[in-house]
Length: 249
Image (tube, rainbow, N blue to C red):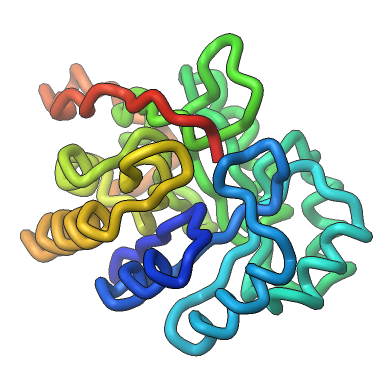
């Protein structure tokens, strides 16, 4: 299975076209008013028409109620809901059943113990998005431009596909692909020139760097249900690029 790449937080026709033209597999739109990447329903409908049939359309929400999800579904006609709040596995399953769409659940990772939540969510969601936990004091759930220790995912064996997120950018994405060989990547703030302002040149550079790293060899996905200690292999990730001062998703 080839690497799937999602550009999230798109809000203009220009940056959406840059993502589609550069070969993004998924494009994400944020429906969360406090975010600088938030789009209203009318804008989402226009962008959805532009993207439809060219990439999977993902609607990102944060603890949204059913009425909000129904309005997004009517306006955007997304291919998938991305849940980026505190939704429980039961809530994930209920949304999937009610709306009949695939659901991706975002989970924050900072330490090995955070991986304990994965099995319950894997049973409810169609795929997982493994993101960096928000820094202390952050008011929004994602897009903070910070990474987590990618070695925590070494040896990760899931039945569902996952996307790696959190602080990825054109400068460090190749290191992430080489180390983790994730099934998918998700980027937002790492391809921006300011909070919520996507940069077409960074979008293109991100996709180019990720695809080049993927082409270096077939993913060597580890098997088993344990998490390999990086010190046992001597493999260490390239230090990620410094975090950008941007707002969350």
